[in-house]
Length: 84
Image (tube, rainbow, N blue to C red):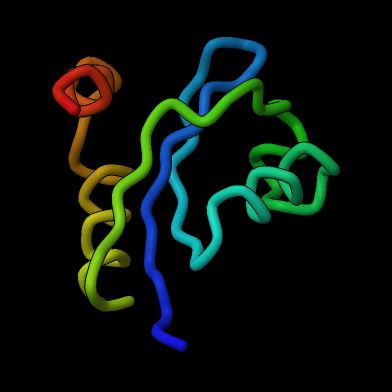
């Protein structure tokens, strides 16, 4: 079975955005909801998945996750979400 690699952006209840990497978006979102996904989403409860994109390799996905987390402003993240 071929591995899947996704980058996703979540909206939290206090209107912040969280970006992450996973091989299964729905399972990861469920973990976030249960407070097991990440330290950030334990403190900032996620409401919904706003955006997700599949990549061919883990390396590509992790590079995009890094770019979104560290290089894009909130406004640019929202433009990315709305462009697809």
